[in-house]
Image (cartoon, rainbow, N blue to C red):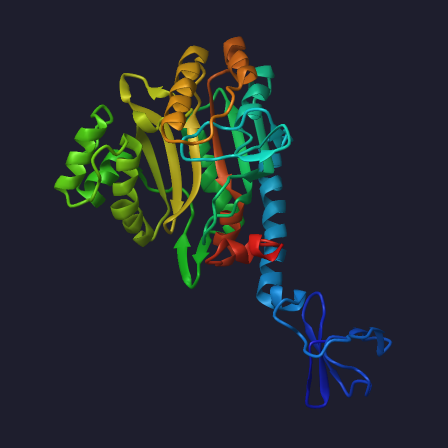
Length: 378
């Protein structure tokens, strides 16, 4: 029971708060009651209810509704992929070799690490012969906390063999449209997410929104000088990727946030290729896109690099950079490299933040609002 209001008791039920008129005299706020039997199942012995640390206060009615919508969204995701004949797979959360992405740090667990993404293991499944696979799983990234970030979060990741990024873009547009019912919400703001979505290259976005020309072949010093010429403060000795993101976060993302439609930001400069292959005939460009809705970065996709030799060289470069920056250094995933050598078919794949998708479906402005337990609630 939540409270006594005049001649009625306000009782928390699963679907709604019920007003029970003329409740038994002995009922007190905090009691666990059986409304039908008008009986107390468990008497509350405290002095004030609901207190600030109570589960009732942690789960207000609007958050309970968001969690119901989260469950519906998860069912919609699985129905979406089933209708397209994707196979749902499960891969380990604890691995000996986590991702080497320079800007991500893994969480240590026992003799290994918790995954930052299921990417490596899912690519091995592609090499083994699966062609359309998806997964909904927990991922973990150390030190990530904020309005749109949680160290533990839920990812949707899917891959198509013998397909390119256009197919993944279509999947993304249709999935978001299906889950959000055509309209995404961020607070009181609505954004039309019906396909197709506008597209823009990263170079065009940097030129239009930041006034900066990015080639992808320039040195870090040359890029930093270009940024300083446009009034973006970049220290001497800043690495290429850090200089780029200084401009991107300061000038580009705020403009993307203002757009009244989602945006596919495609054709990334080669220094940010990660595990994407370079564009044929244009080695300065990586076949990669990110999807934004209302300024919220929702997904990151690659036309997958399939060359084992080039992938090993990139991994070794990443390890060298991590050492130089004082970051944790992880073992190379030799099983992934062996799978690439065995033969990974031409493929494209994407990681999409499920919690962020639920935010867009519910109008939540903080990731905590769509989680059963936020980090500070454990």
